[in-house]
Every structure is written in C-alpha cells, then in structure tokens.
Image 1: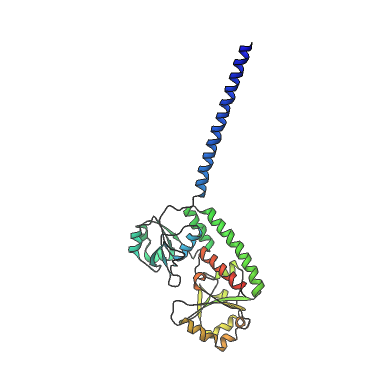
Image 2: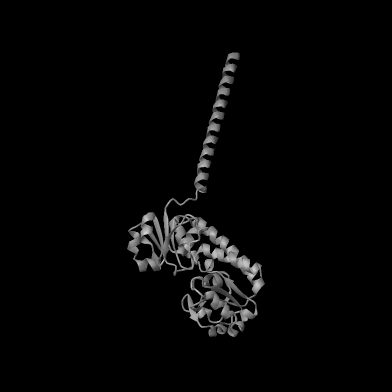
Length: 307
C-alpha cells in the first residue's frame, strides 16, 4: 500500500512540473510575439526613395512623416535647409532639373497634375512610378488623404487632420476675441502691383473655410485664385481686417509698400483705421499644403496673442 502511495505521489509531482514548464514556455512565446507586433507598429519609415515635383506636395508628404529625398520649389517658397537638411534640390517646379531627378534614381515621383500635363507625364513615368495629384480638385485635406492612401498612411493623415481642426478652433476663438467678427481680405503687394486673393487656394480655404472669416465685399466674386487691382479699388472691398504679404521676389516691393502706407487712399481704409493690418510672410502662408497650413495657423496664433 505504501509503495502504491509513493508511486502515485511521484507521478503527481512529475505531472505538475510538466504543466508548469508548458505554461512558462507559452508565456515566453506570447511575450516574443507581442514584442514583434510592437516593433512593427512603431516602425514609421518609408522605405522608398521619393521625389516631389511640387513644394505643396512636399508639404503634404511631410505631414505624413515622409521627407522627400528630392523636391522642386517655387521662387517664393525656397528649400529651407533647416526643414529639409537632407533633401536634394531639383530646381523650380516650372522647370525641373531632369538630370538631377534621373541621377537620384527615385522609386516614386509625386507630381502636380498641372505640371505633369505641361512637362509630359511619360517623361516621369520613364524614370519611376509616378503619382499625379490634382491640386485644383478638392482641398488640401483631400490631397493629404489621397497621398495617404498611396503611401499607406491613412491613420497618420486622419490624426493630422484632427489635430489641425482642433488648432483651427483655438485660433478662430482667439481671432474673434482679438479682431472681432468683421470682414477680412488678403492682399499681396509687390513692385508689379497689388493682388487680392479670392476664395480659392492658396489663402481662401484657410481664411474663409477653415477659420470661417467673413470675406470682404467682392472677395467671393474673384474669378480664380486672385485678381490684380489698382490701389484706388482697395476702398471698394471695405475690409475690417487685412492680411498683407510683401513680395520677397520682386525687387523694390518693400519700398512700394512703404509708399502705399503713406498714401491717403491706404490711410482711409477701415482695416488701417482699426489698426488691424497684419503683415504675414509668403512662407508659410502661400504654402498651400497640410504642413504649410499648420505653420500658418501657428503664425496667426502668435500674431493674435501679441496683439
């Protein structure tokens, strides 16, 4: 009887040891599996070499955490070495440096539809897979989501848009407090003349759709992106607040703006009398992209907080 009891006890101990070993092995396996999943989720590198034939598309890519290896620029939005320390300059979007583009051997090219048509899409498709984004269709959020679909960054795009919308609400509330509910217009002063921006890009969407400012008289009647006017027409808009960009490209623009400020026509404007003329920079305000608009919002917040 004692022998049977000893044997049964030994078998029970062996069984418990085996179960404990199996449980330990399963736990180790689970931890390894979780670790592998975590590494996959946190990896945010884009493993393709990207060229952007539009500084605006570059801003959308940046918002998705993708810094292009090469990009074209516009004359008033040059390549900032602090923002793009390792990005190669590929010339102006209107006339890309095709030799530099070929030499960098991109895997993918993102190009504005306007210039794909002007330059010939086949030239780019012969170099790499080319994605054409029409910046005249929809708004910047549509462009961002389109690129996010291509690059598998949908969640990143949605998070960026949610953060942007929250920032818009904050800045809009601040604007109402600081400048009120009056009408708004945006103009660009250069040595070549005065330009009033309408409801379309680059400034219309952020001012009148995102921030929901009320456009000054006639702004919503502008056909296209902007309209060139004479200084004599400025009082017709009767804006309570003006955002002014001074050209960084046309030589003598600063002097023209100084002369304009001393002109009786300028001094008669509501915005001038209200002390609600805000000088803003072409960069980032003319950078109609997800990243550019975010920087513009931050700039406006700084301006309003200092008022």
